Amino acid sequence: MTQESKTWTADRVVELKNEVCPFTFIKSKLAIEDMAPGQVLQVVVSHAPAAENVPRSFENEGHAVLGVDQTGEHEWTITVRKKD
Image 1 (tube, helix red, strand yellow):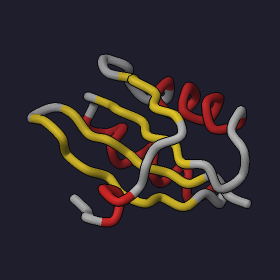
Image 2: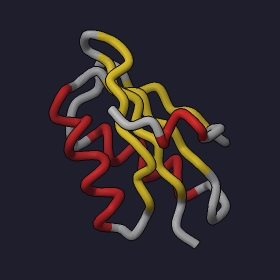
Image 3: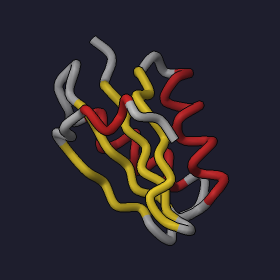
Image 4: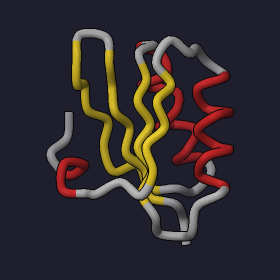
């Protein structure tokens, strides 16, 4: 869990609970494509591998992962800033 992501206000939130990889990243990627550079996306997932794979995939595409916070027993919020 990181503290940094708690200081960001999301421009968009995508709820992907009960989705599994690779659909979590595919749907997240589609969401961020519609956003302006510098905007912040939060993705909520309930699949543990997605909490690792989605941030890694965003970083590979050049976006800034601001944090991955476990917000429940089986829930994570991934905060990403779209690359400029």
